[in-house]
Image (tube, rainbow, N blue to C red; front, side, top):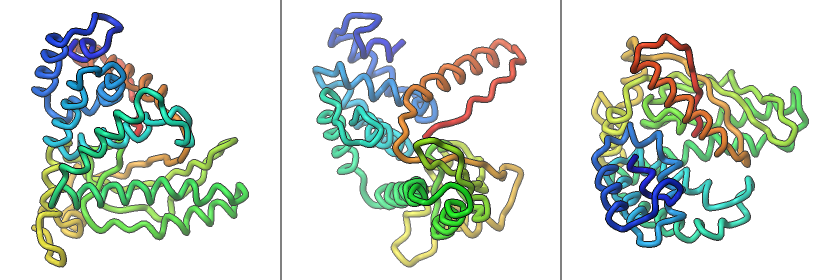
Length: 278
């Protein structure tokens, strides 16, 4: 309901109702708001007063994972094309300004966590662009395995599509280019530890809290987490590709997740397994 008050599609915009919506949204935990990031970012289209922009900056300042996810989504929505060349005439300047404000307020351990996560993200997605010039088949497969082998996990990070699980290991033999007429997607497997959004953020910041060169505490030490094992550790596959607009896919999957939550809430044993996009 609060989100619907930020755009004029259901109700006329009014400063009082927008302020009420902002106050309500500030009360929700980060793991709830993660699902509605596309709607939050699109609400900037109608943000003539600036309340939504203030809300996004505030949310990013109170949750590092929200800051990461909001930044990724804004980077996508600043452009109208898949290659990121045509600026959105309404959103580009507004989102660019919000993105700068979020980046400027990130300091210390939060800054180092942010940089580690974005560095990993760019390395993994960049492989798709690296292998694209190679012919499909064995040549592209070898290029994929070589590029994946160069990616190293050195601190606490996560897959953008799964902000509730710590990345422990990469299966370097799993890099597998997939069939695509125009893109060069590839699949890779990762060993992850499921811990929840809030716990991952706490551990991620703890891992970056020590001075450079000093080891993090055991609970935030990647090597210690690898050795510890536990029932929450599993292998997870993900597909990476550059230059592909998945915004419509995100909305469809969001609707599936909402219906899954409704069915689970009323006790209906309907099997729905929407995958995640980052």
